[in-house]
Image 1: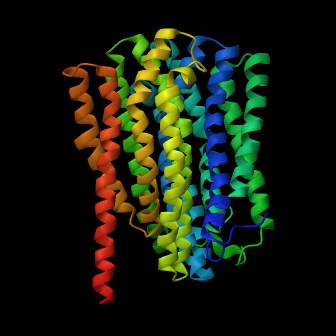
Image 2: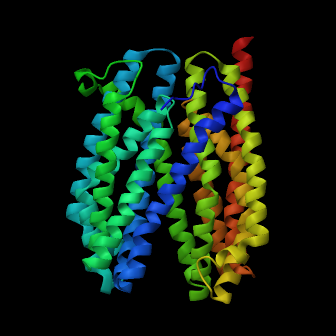
Image 3: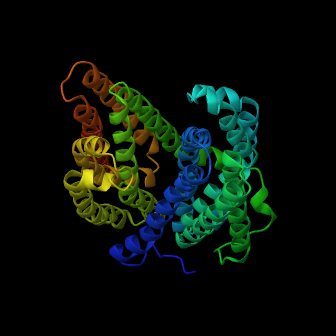
Length: 447
């Protein structure tokens, strides 16, 4: 499967061909995450459904952290590939493998020992506490496969191939769905069966990815040196990736807070926002994929010494993203309540979802710009700024406004939705300001 030449191909062609598999992979991952919940909802008990739902939130936070950290792999590999420094690329491979091993060991121990405490902290209902604990422990035992998939996918994207990770997640998703039905419907294993299905599917995906990795035509040989401990490279990967991962964790924390505020308004409002978040999750995948693709594009071209092409890539991608962002925002604003009918037939729930989506629709449009800028900054190894601005917006804008909205303002549900819009607008101001600051610095250096 041919990789995309991010340095020499036309910018539009390169970005579309590289980002499209990422969009599809993220979409399949979202479906993959919903598969367990669908299966237990169809073939098991409400207790099992609660266990899977609660556990999924915990694993989603873990996945966000891992995805962020391995962004460091993709960016650093793009820089070294662009510079044609293949010894450095080999070191990035080695560093990534060590990070996979260390993270797997830590997470396995944490989930194995503290699964019950984590389930309690996640507010698992008492009736579902045992099933939630078991689900987390089983997934903890399979952490190596879950983390390995993220790391290996980052390696392939780092050398310009976003198609193979799509294939891996498609195989894992299909396997997971089949095993869910077999273990939950026919063996009546409930949430436990869903956990085993997830781990086995990820394991199969990792085995296939290792087979492809062995046969893949890299620009360097995969010999025993890729298992060499290299503290400097590991530190570089973490310096780029950890801020992105921590920002993902903070975003998940904000949504926990937001859902808590919404829950105070009533069951109908809570259900409506839950439906709205599912719809937003799917639509926001498009700008997210552009962010991921742009990080790789920029790192490749900066490594190759093509700074102007990297900048052109930003604005070309931004045009594509903004066009699609406008379509997404329009769909959410005008058709939100109709789309909510996919998940619920309750008219009150659909109305609440539609109202919340009207408020948050502008966020999707603004983020289509913000994510391009943050992808550009990540590719420049400026991920620390991305984290700092994101954390500042969450704790200084979004959470305070959400608190005021649910306590003092009228139209509480609508205003809670506006907290996300104010946050996105604040991020836009900060990111544009930082971009202009970097441009001024470049001009001063050139003079």
